[in-house]
Image (tube, rainbow, N blue to C red):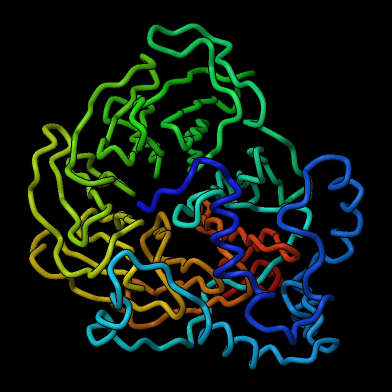
Length: 449
């Protein structure tokens, strides 16, 4: 993974210089971009809260033609279509291996983009989703169809789409220390943790930091339960976290780090139980549904299938042309997906892992996040900005819904019951949380009539 100084400004500068909407086209004018990135989550933010609420977009307004992000196209000197075209032409995809995006195109299948699986529900401007590292985009997690957790600057926020209210769950800007005592836990805690990645599942929240920090909080307990640092290596950034339940019912998680380490932590005993080492920075790890295999991707074009007990490589996944940052298993445990900076997501079948069964193409850039619905019907893949693609798995990934908007994507998450899809948008002016709802052939109200 690309390393910058651990100061947030550098990463912000990267995104702003390369990808800010206002830099793409001066025609957008001042009305499009107001204050600088993020603003503040303090009084000023609360002061602007009513203002944000006024600018929120509902499903009814969108049906009447309002832009889902509230962008006033009628007042701008450029049409949405023209601006979309400009973005596609001018967005600079970050590559570690030059021309990897061009090289991968010929293998990609053409998809039917007429699918409509999730429909727009709301856009909440008071929930400002932010990013600290331009390659790490797993900062939004839904735990129910209306509960979602996300990063907003130094805070982990909880948002309820039911009550339209947000609350701070964890503030990493000051001193965070565990309120419980466990052997091996860093009782002195951390100061000013820059959160690079997040996971929330099974009532557990784990935040990973730029210096290998791991902060573990059980949502139903006050305070933080456990703090640890994976490594004191200079190259320690925590790239990804996966929370899972072991066969015995224990809550555990896997951390992937830039030092090439993949570490398994047991949250019953509050200790590290396994540590596998790989020859390159590990950007993402996913555990198969039966718990037997790990897919490991990172700063190497080839991914690895690894035995989760021994750490031994079972197969290499060869085909991508750049470094990978995302992976996910289909709930059937037979297929998995990997997302790469070559602008593709590849689907693999573990019964014949020598070649991917499909290559799916993004429009603008790297595939930085992948999620399957718990029922296995849909797979979503997120580009760095502007596009989330939702594929119909049963069609063999040949049909998709393309959700498009403007802004960097901080993360996306299906709710466990598959009913909601949340997308975090990071932008100087239009930062927000987009919510989509699963379309049913017969909605509840229709069935009453």
